[in-house]
Amino acid sequence: MNRAAPPLGQVQRWMHEALRAPGGDTDARLAEMIAPPGRIQALDALGIYQRSYYQRLLTCMREQFPALCRALGEQLFTDFAREYLREHPPESYTLYDLGRRFPGYLEASRPDRDAAEAEREVWIDFMVDLAAFERLLFTLFDMPGCEGQPLADASTPDAALRLQPAFALGAYRFPVAVYYHGVREEKSPDLPPLEPSHVALVRKDFLTRTVPIGPTQHTFLKILAEVGSVPRAMVDLCTRHGLDRAAVEHSWSEPGGVRERWIDAGFFVPA
Amino acid sequence: MTEKSTEVLGRDLGLGLGLRNVHFEHILEHWPAVDWFEAISENFMDSGGRPRDVIRRVAERYPVVLHGVSLSVGSTDPLNLDYLARLKALAAEIQPAWVSDHLCWTGILGQNSHDLLPLPLTEEALDHVAARVDRVQDFLGRRLILENPSSYLTFSHSTVEEPAFLRALAERTGCGLLLDVNNVFVSAFNAGTDPQAYLDDFPFERVVQLHLAGHSHRGTHIIDTHDCPVRAEVWELFARAWEATDGAATLLEWDGDIPNFETCHAELLKARDFMDGPTHAAAPAPLAADGRDAVSTPVDFMSPTAMAAVRGDQT
Image 1: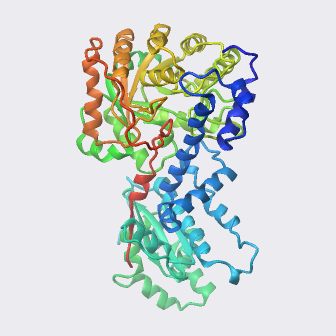
Image 2 (image 1 turned 90 degrees about the vertical axis):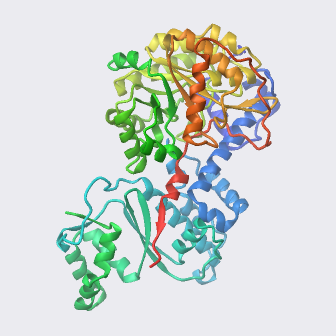
Image 3 (image 1 turned 30 degrees about the vertical axis):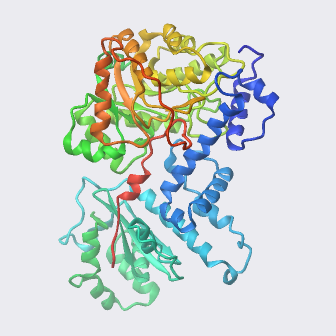
């Protein structure tokens, strides 16, 4: 236990590479780096770290993408996730960041990525969308919200309605939220057909809700996120998309209408 | 150090439990009679949601200690100042009795293995780690407490035994020590050395806190899984460490297959049986029964709860 010591940085680079790409060391190299065995051989000792590295990260990936794991099957999901981790090893001090680049990786690594859009595999589109949805849902869990502060209520004027911080919008080629909740409820849902879906995600009292919305509502909320004010967003929506202002306002403010439902769901805080 | 007086008092915190997400509801509902909690810093430092709310509320009623897994104080990468700033902000808000991490490195070249990797114990490593501990303590404005890690290998060129390394580190930097007696047992078993000899040389006078945990015995080696009750041999080591540290704050870690709160608490309270020395005959540690692969260095992670707190509207 007292050989000529390689510099600390060199030792760390060696071990780091051994974790990420096991099997690259000769017996001589292992003997050079690892002390004569205690109870287990050097290769087995290093193997504990090597196995744990991927197992730990893969466990986290399955926890962050449970519906995608169900959709792909655990083995295929694990294969994709392992390749993802090889190409994009974790860089952050927090495991919350682990799946951040996974949806983009799935899209970039799809085998038909160079094919014309019409010729692409639909099921891959679904997996990419589902991954993006689950990542968005995951980030909403812990982003700053407005718990402990008052939400808007029915008496809040439209001009004072502001989207709350723990709020996000998603637009997908498939009804991914329906599929996700089917998995969560252990209903073993079939893969859904191609059918665009829009969803608002909002956290209230630390409970995240997925609220299905229509394409026009999605556009309205997107504009609202940009301009900040409901009356202005309504004008912009009607102007940009040629909608009838009176019809939009009626849909917004009628009893049981959009305004009421979204306030109940906790979309808004008072300005 | 600015927090030293708090630590001297805090050293006698008593018997604490790791603050784990699966117990949040129970704790907030029952406010159980636990002396204190230890929180994994990384699970709370970036949180703007429920974890941050929970730790705030817990810290209002209990002493809390922040225990990190990503400081990577032994890495040759630059210290992550963004990480340290977030840790400092969390500490300013929670006012922990102390802040701890591990004598290890977790990554290099900007990457993070999320494992607590062993250091070659050399004079070079000691110089390197001591300089970084100084910087961390200056940055945080408080003393750092460092834990002996569990390990599965020893580097050929190590020249210093771990107790001596930690003693020198504490003397140079003024850092405190967290003695994990389960890690002592795990590392010693894997290296084929004597855990009692390890304790013979350990600088108990620097110890602020003790850790207890269960491990997975694989026959040829032991993995530090934190997923079962404390083994008899570890209780023996605890009894000695408790006496030698004059009753340092003691915490039970349970991070895999976490049972209900009462079970964890009952396991923690077994420590009382060993505070007057080892009173139970040490039984041999059983072999792991299920043959599954055990993962070293469990990282308490919250995504199961994160994804459970989701509701879907139907219309």
